[in-house]
Length: 416
Image (cartoon, rainbow, N blue to C red; front, top):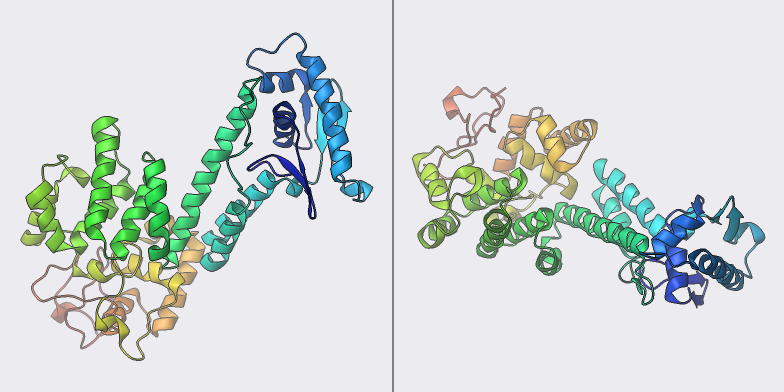
């Protein structure tokens, strides 16, 4: 039963339209409550804003027509495989295998993808997200609202499903970014942000994707547009994640940050954390910013990726994609709790990924992981630039990473 698009019944290569608008609405109202009794009055309320006096009779007539259609569409199926429309205590029950309905199958794949992603298996999660979203052939319950009935209950269900569709799309794009597909998702994100300007997560994804692809100027414009719409026009507050992404974007591109401070520091008043772009530059020049040059070349998800020849040294391959976000969180000194929440992982999975990263690098401590990443050219520091909060001079470091001057201690983390 296909309801994510034009309502139709599919049996192999055969397709049967679900009938007139009233019949499609009835099928939708029953399918969203498959294998549960739905009262005749509830069906009438779902199909009419003000049910006519003949509403119950019309429901009975449409039930009869729907039974005929189900019998015709699935005539060749075994009896136990055919969907059945049963009378039950003043109502009706659509008895069917749940996963034979596309909207149920959509939720199944979405849940599976979310669980797989939480376990750190991002490639498998991406496949499950694609399977879920491929079921959508158009707007939910296409053809409704009805011409002769407003179908308030059906339209309400359609709105819920459309919201789930965009939420699952956001989740899928988040996994794509973890897998390094930022160039691929940018066109889609531009279109989605244009259609859904109030959805901060889409805007956050676009800012991160543009930052990694080197489009920082456009990313700044995307942030400022969101600030104007959400803060100045609607009086809302931006999410901490969006503010943090913007701040890291500015730290990662000081030359563009300076340009922003000259041309638009007062464009929308205070920026993230109550500071405008000019103040971010001032903090950096004073050496009091809480991010260093390390952030500029972090692979995921805020930095632009590996840059220049240092990222392509022979025999110094970058870590597997699923370990890159783990390395980033170690480098910025995030606690395990904070890092696992940011990445959507359980604490157990995050700890396992940390151990896997240390094994991959051949080191014993998290600080040594940062030093090894520096030696491999995955991150760089420049003389005279401030390091993260908590950085110590090379002379005070232990023998855990000897002979590696200029490697910062991650924020909030003491040297071993």
